[in-house]
Amino acid sequence: MCDVQIRHAWAAKGAPEPPITPATTMKILGIESSCDETAAAVVEDGAQVLSSVVASQLSVHAKYGGVVPELASREHLRGIVPVVRQALQDAGVELGEVAAIAVTSGPGLVGSLLVGVTYAKALAFSSGLPLIGVNHVEGHIYSVLMDAKAAKKPIGLPALALVVSGGHTHLYEVLAGGGYRLIGHTRDDAAGEAYDKVAKLLGLGYPGGPVIDRLAPFGNPHAVRFTLSRMKGNAMDFSFSGLKTAVLRWVQNSDLENEIAARRALLEKTPVPSVEQWIAVTPPKTLDLLASFQHTVIQELLSRVRLSADEIGASEVIIAGGVAANEGLRQAACLPHGSAYGLVFHFSQRSLSTDNAAMIAAAAYPKWQRGEFSGFDLKAQASLSLGGMARPEPAR
Ligand code: KG4
Ligand code: ZN
Image (cartoon, rainbow, N blue to C red; front, side):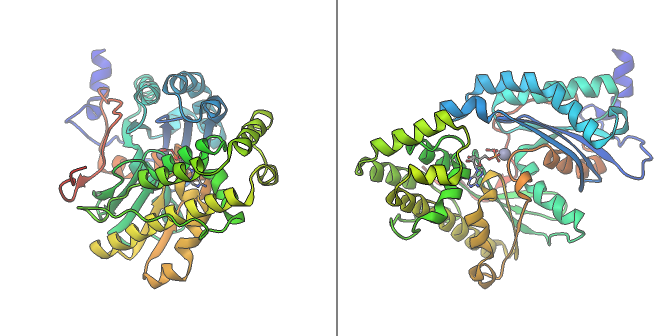
């Protein structure tokens, strides 16, 4: 025990000291288990993804219409060892060849986080490698920064980052030197959560974002007029609960029982239906609703982005997180009005928009360079935050 403490003295809290690793390239093993994806990846020099393995638990949670925390932890326990082994094998490296082990320490489901954090600690302990705890939200931002670095086209800082996922709809100022300033966030549901709830209501299964995204182009986005939320206090905050309630009212006032039952029956038979199969059980009026819902979410997101970019004087915008995979959002951001805003938008590759471990390994790289290591007291923190709030939170 004493021996281990001495060898790991640099990794202990309060005594960071960079390890002596004279490698010309530096590989980090990343581990992610904050929600319903067990993931591991090896990333070289914070930019080159040598491997990225994601074991999705979708089939486990789909029938419940959302993530069941207890089931998620159990699946992570089952998946973590083979997933890490596969990531090392795909990258063609042994554990001893990586320079550090990075792991998501929060935010997320505490039971899920615990599996990744505990396993990463065990690996670090047994291998003598340094451990680096990473904030999941920072990881999402790095899914974009990593691509820019690989393409040797660094993003000009300060930049604006919109992290938009199942748990977050947050706007950050990304500062030069690795800092973040939170400038706005959702006061109720996250955008991805709104997608998931609307999809559940309409019998479209879980997760809702991808299926609504695929069906939205078949409807009229102006058919149902939803109002954008008006925020008292911080105008850069978001709200999606009003939109969700408006969709619920629309559904209650329409006679949709039969079509919803038909879609649920389709999902029972076919776990991932094709667009044609969905359209066969989704009348035009409902497609119009989906298109209008998606249009409103995109307007809500982009209007706050424009305001925030103006506020901080940023001309480059990072959009990351599961909802960043949305085709409608990507198209809208790149439409003429995107350039009319004078903004340059950066999205991550679609495969790196949703949860993965490559972004965790990439976010750990500058920490490794700065010698910011975690001790074995690293905790799984369900509500870990990133960046201080720029202004007081408005009363809810
Ligand atoms: O980042 P992520 O994988 O996990 C969290 O950190 O939450 O995001 C998952 C969320 C889900 O709510 C899912 O419905 C949404 O991202 N999502 C999408 C799309 N793909 C995933 N939302 C809209 N359009 C998509 N194409
Ligand atoms: Zn995420």
